[in-house]
Image (cartoon, rainbow, N blue to C red; front, side, top):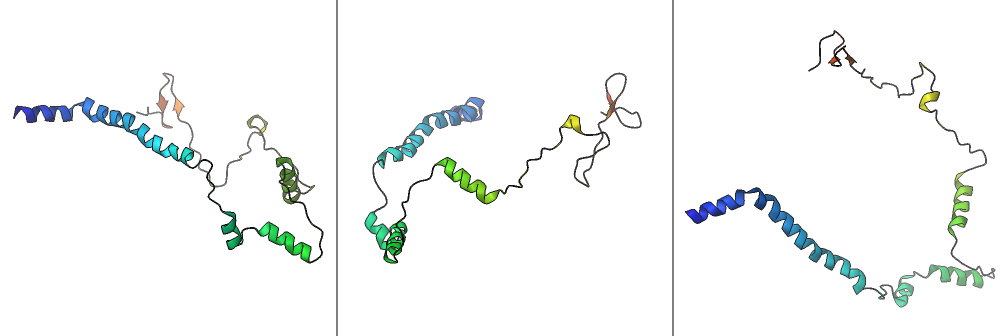
Length: 145
């Protein structure tokens, strides 16, 4: 009976309830993370894509389009990667026209008194007033507790 009581006391203690899961977490997580991050080093240098499989499924479209253009008598086009600046210029030409104008909203100190910028139907809850002792009071003067 005494051993059962000792085990019950041990299980109900705060050290066992909070300390044991913490110890298990602190000692178990590195083993899990080691396996998780080891994958990066296991497959380094291995190529998952095979050129033969790519041609089999038709993933060399750029070369196919270039060959078709040459057969039709068109000029060969040199393909190269675009820089980030070139991509940005193309994006800006597509998305924005010359009539684009940046407008900034008013700052809080620039709002004229009586102007309300809140959306329609916005419910305003007034801040409760304070009495001479610094306590918040209801509109009828009774203190809020």
